[in-house]
Amino acid sequence: MSVSEDLPLPLSAKLRRGELLAVNCPSRDVLKHMTNRWGVLVLVVLLGGTQRFSDLRRKIGGVSEKMLAQTLQGLEGDGLVHRHSLPAVPPHVEYNLTPLGQEAAQRVEALVDWIEEKLPHIMSFRREREADALENDAEA
Image (cartoon, rainbow, N blue to C red; front, side, top):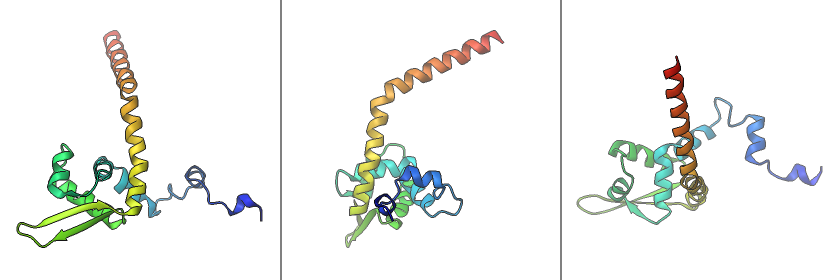
């Protein structure tokens, strides 16, 4: 057996093999929890440290209470987020990243940073495409 056969395959090679693309692959649920709009934002906010539910909701503009709760449950179920309930009135619940969640959040943060960096280029492309569409509609 060669040395290269002992090394784990990178994700790109696994994708070409089709594991993540298989309909019943359990990694799809993890991918969904981590990369949906709210999952990404929760992970990035929790990189800053422990947060209460109300703090997360306030920091993540536009998320409903229901969607935030579902997102946290999914991330908790995957072992990425830890939920700590403190005995208090009213209930006091805090969320933080597990070591696995910390690693995942750092990787997601790289994507978020890339999007923020490239946003002017993306928006310029969108404007050009909209202008082209308007021009084509006017010609039709």
